[in-house]
Each structure stands twice: as structure tokens, then as C-alpha cells.
Image: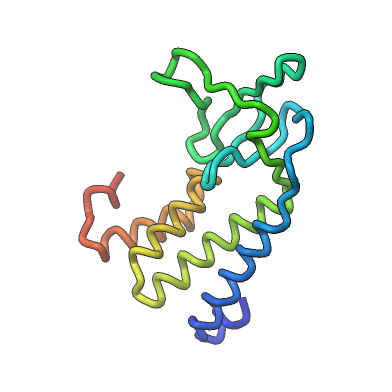
Length: 155
């Protein structure tokens, strides 16, 4: 944050990117079971909360944290997507907060560097974790407007 505050955007970008790489390394392999309420990573940019756990059958049902809704196998209201324990990587509260902050900070650095495609990418990464995050929504909107995409910016 010090590099960003000083306006040294290249160093800020380098440090935030390195922090994200270290974050990836901090994740531990999936345990044999997950508890209801646990925060998990189910895809590269997919974070969810375990809503139901049937450990005897190795079946877990999640709520996507970015969309704040259940993850469906097909059409909403049909069949819920089933996950096995090994498909889910546990994410602690501290890990979640750190990655969320890094993604938002990378979006801010990208905006200051006039790299609007990257700003959109990082704002989207933050919104995958919390779809209602005000800073991420604002940064995404700015990036989309600068990319001359006013339609999606107003959504």
C-alpha cells in the first residue's frame, strides 16, 4: 500500500501481484470433509460457502459468494451442483480478506495506469468474491466506461 500511496504504480503492481502469488501458495489441500458454513474455492475465480454437507456420500452444495445464490447444475430451480470434498479448497477468513483486498487494489492500480482491461479483470475478480462490493463495482464501472462499454457499466 505504501508504493500505491506514493504513486509508484509499477512497484505497487509488482508487489500486489507477488502477494497474490504468495496467497495461492498459502492454500492447503482439500481435507477429507468440509463443514457447513466453510468458505471454499471451487474454481479459479469461484468462491462459495458450504450450505449443505453430506459427508457420507461426499456431496457438498454451495452458495456462490459473488452471486449470493445457490450453484445450480443447470437451470436455476432445477438440480443443485454437487461437489466432492477434493474439488473444494478451504479458504480461511484471513485468506479471503487478503485476496479480496489484493484484487481490489490491483483494480485501483490498473485504473491509475490507464490499463482498463486489467482494471476490469481485477474488479471482476473481487466481485467473484463479493458481488456487492462498492469499491469493486465502482472500479468496474469506471473501467467499462473508459473502454467505451456504457451498457455493461450501467448494469
